[in-house]
Structure formats: structure tokens, C-alpha cells
Image (cartoon, rainbow, N blue to C red; front, side):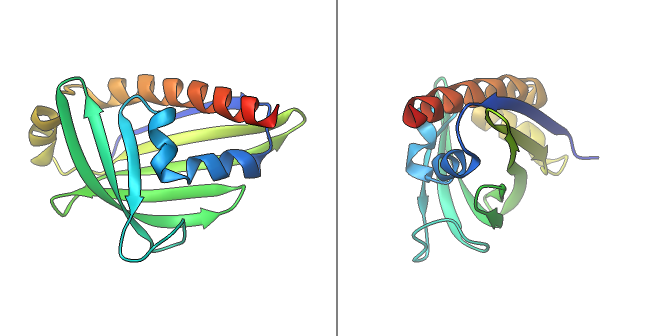
Length: 155
């Protein structure tokens, strides 16, 4: 069974504005402590179902690149993508946006899609032994940083 980790954060900014930040791949490194950003591939210039991108990641002295394909892309509502490494499924990331009185609630979710044989290999490559616990902390940090950026932008 695939592990799933989710975290939510209320942010005092409109959903469309936060969605635009999340889908601005080169900026992802501004709020994620592990992801350094991404680059659209194969002629893609922005988020759309089927668009692919390359992600760069780091954890201390470890760094790695992945490839991802956008699964869902609904402005202001949902953005999800599936990640592979060396052609092997790794994860699925989803961002959901729900309007609130003060702005919106953002939920970031991660699903571990790695086959059993690949987990020890990816642990050695990333320096992360317990991916679920590590990702739970990363989600909280990412949402806090995203909130700071979105709320500053909303002014």
C-alpha cells in the first residue's frame, strides 16, 4: 500500500494567487527546503495536463533530479503531478485550494509510489531513511514559506 502524507494551512491570500505561486516551478525553491525548482520540458511553458518538467532536489550533501508529468491543472483549485526517477515511479504530489473567509486553505499531499525494491536505492541517493516522516516535516515547512510569500504578495 502506498503511503500518503498531507498537510493543510490557511493562508490570507486568494486561491488563484497561491495556485500561481505553486505552479511557477522555477520559484518552488523559495518555499521548499528540498526542492530547488523545476524547468518545463518538451516545449511546455507552463502548467497543463500532460506537461512535463524536470525537478532538482537537495537534502544536505545529497542532490538528485526527477522528471514529472502534470496530472491535473485547475487554476485556483488543484494542481497535481507524478514524479519518476530513472523511469521508475516515485511519488505523486497534489495541491488543493479551498476558499475561506480570510483567503484559502491549501492542502499539500504526497503519495509514495516507489516499488519496494526502489525504496532502499532512493534512500541512499537522497539521504532520507524515513521518507514519510521527512516529507511530513517538509510539507509543514513548505506551506509556512508559501503562506509568507503569498501573504506578502497580497499585501
